[in-house]
Length: 399
Ligand code: EPS
View (tube, rainbow, N blue to C red):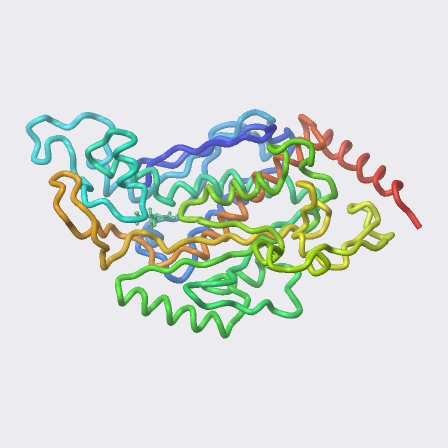
């Protein structure tokens, strides 16, 4: 795992922190490149009021100097503007014993079905589910997107691009456009739902409005597409080096994500082998893939846990957000009495943002596999190793 990252920060704490390790030295990098991705994560029809408060902006604390990475850990700080409204509630110092709420403000005890609230308080032995929800909040994904933005910048140096679009929302499918846009994000970011189907978009917006009026929430599916990958990232030799598993694990770690499928995914289980596997033919101009091409891409760019060089396609399913304004039944953990769940401010849907987060997770996993394959403490060393590999595979099979 040459590229590692970790995040810290509570949703209404002072700031979010991302720490990225293993990025080679000499990568040109500006805070604006990270901010560009943070802004994308904040968009989407169906978001709540929090996104009007925040204007996420990153500050590099270490690892970057004069517009270039140093090869040392990159620490990033993203302040929470909402902190000023929560300072007293989230303060690290103990509150006076005689205070009104016995040391605690805005306690949450009417735990939400589907959220981390209940399991979290039992596991961590807390009385107040705020101690759990502040970290379980999808606000944490801001820090992931910041780390992913650096990996995306690294991959872009080698012509690798990552895009996504929303393919399903709350029971409505989006049609795949034909022709499919070259620049997926250029087209998807134009849509308030990041979908490429205008007709479906109008129906989805109506469904979000109806869900909002009803105090309900909606889930959906996004598709991530990565173009320009060389053949041979990941490995078939051991379970934990297979890229399918690494990607699926990363995607399933996104809050509220319940499923991930690669290429044809679950549908492949229903078809005959002849309808699933991609026939191979020569393609002398495609050096990155070893001068071969798959006639179709049902495998979604992965065979044997390795990239084939065809576009990588992953679809990610998100359940509806578990904070319902018309709350479900639960218990009050303080009294054990039946209760309506807490209805803390939230989003009706955050599926468009999930697509941006999934892009970031793909960038992190692929940059890790890329540096693992080509090594290199500096960008120039990484490039030499990469170019030598590509030159070699270009000579392996030729007609
Ligand atoms: C989010 C910030 C949160 C929520 C949402 C995602 O802000 P707040 O809790 O202040 O409204 O909008 O988080 C959840 C849906 C959740 O269940 O925690 C963000 O930055 O993406």
